[in-house]
Amino acid sequence: MKKADINEIDIVLFEPIIPGTLIGKEVIDNNARRLGIVKGIRLKYPPLKLFLVVRGKDSEENIPFDSIDKIGTIIKLKTSITKDEIAIHEVLMILENIRKEISSLFKLSGL
Image 1 (cartoon, one colour):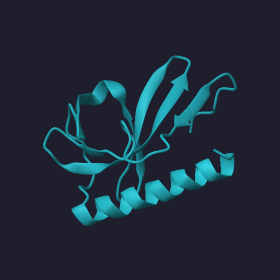
Image 2 (cartoon, one colour):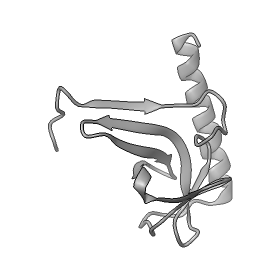
Image 3 (tube, helix red, strand yellow):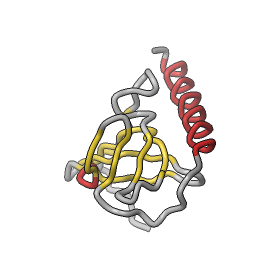
Image 4 (cartoon, helix red, strand yellow):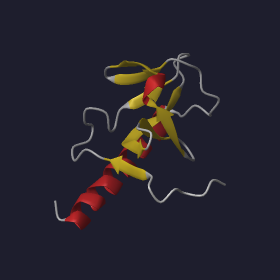
């Protein structure tokens, strides 16, 4: 396991309304396999790197922004991902869990 650098900045950004511009959107790979829902945007520095934080069935993945092919009502990736596909009922459950989690974060912050 890599030791964290004291000078490294690692921030996860959220949107207060879900679905938002990116948060809450479904992510599919280039084979149209449903991978998960965007939970947040991770920013790491230095060097500057941006990731989609995608929540799937049993895990969260950081997907680099340069892996994105298209952004519309869904987010399509350029490549295939070796991860279990999620079913439509799981999409709705994951989306609701993300909504509750982000809502509680905004309540805690007083926003």
